[in-house]
Length: 629
Image (tube, rainbow, N blue to C red):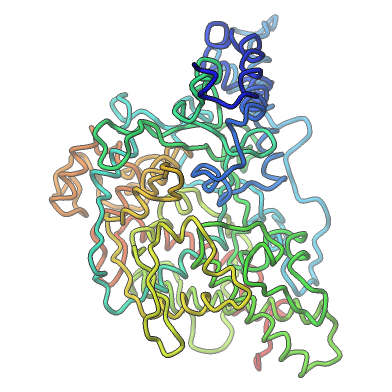
């Protein structure tokens, strides 16, 4: 009996839903349903009351929690969806005296206008005498207060290639054929390589610093359902009795990854994938849609202190400039970030260092208030982060030529006035969605935990660390030190097309379900409408690619075997996804990455330095460190 297959309460709800949504597939087309905000809210509500969208432990809950949206991002996303619905309704109404336009073009024209409520701007007045940067990045640029601010649109080097020119994912290639499954690309190109790491003189800490820096500069919030529940995007996750009633394909927030038959690991045919929240672009129009960055763009330790004044306040003790340097994030004023045990370790270390510096400053300046002690200590922590990034991290990732070309170096001593008020430090979509994910190929499958004498205590599997923070949850915090010692000793994997199975088969594995990080990265690029790899070669002034041959006029920066793999999965060179094409390039001599990622990384890090009015090396009378400091 079907009644034995599902919880009893679902049976009653199913009968109700049959009357509520039984008309959906016949009366409402899929595209119309996805563009109807009221309908989408009703769909979300029904997935919630049946508990198909559940807060319970699951792979999709882990994924959504990691990229959890804040209230501001959700409000901006709902505002944009409402605008889409309104634009469609307006375009449908006949208007006397106006020339008839095709429906899609009419919608575009409506969305191209700035909303009557105006463009989202900074509310307040910038204080030009403020010696400390704001928590949310506002007023860093006095002429453009929202540049680099949290909860603002990403920037673009190239116009997105959305299917509809507005906001739907890039799913078709240069010749009009469907792009290959992101999972298929992953299994063919980003194959596992669990051998001993080849980078003998580069520790795993390089990868970890890059990940730490990612969470300082970028956070892409995901779409969620009613009550901020994780979206269910695969019909395989819908109970049998409800399959004919609840249809995930009607959900606008879903863009699931198809899994080919005969997959090496998965027996199911669908991988859950919620889309990123979309908002108006930097020009305040709805065409094309843009994704929101919840972090500040600047290297300002916002992953330590939080990207809003409210989060920063929650972290502080309000006594002698100290912060809550608790063992777990849940004890330290921020949402718990499950699955990032090693990253949490580094965050805790920086909070400990904050308190150490604050106590030292208190001894030197006993008259300083809690506010002054906190802000001065935060200023030092930010300077440390900037210095490590540009003096220690980037010189390993990029060679000297690239460092000089993008002016990423600094004099050995003294001030360095690099600030340019016309430079927008905002995070570029191609950087955050593809180029700065190169570190995923550097991750090891085993993380060592070392004792104080650096002898091996244990080795933890990556896929297990990605589903639990238990090792760093104890009050003693011993595991924090053990992991950090391990990352200083363990060698890192090379930057190449290979990725470990702990990431490509077992990401957030729970109850027999999991994700593939390489496929997720590829799908995220398509979700964001990123043009293909060859378009960015042209942007960077590199030779064009017109064939799959690893020679002039072709994939000249790929080895023959990799070029053959790309040809086996893509129908045209222009179809190659930016993440896959860039990651699989041969590294430039003296660098860890190839020419396209060098271009994108160099350009973004140059902007982050030159567009920061509070950069630690500046001699500005208001914001500078003293020569003694």
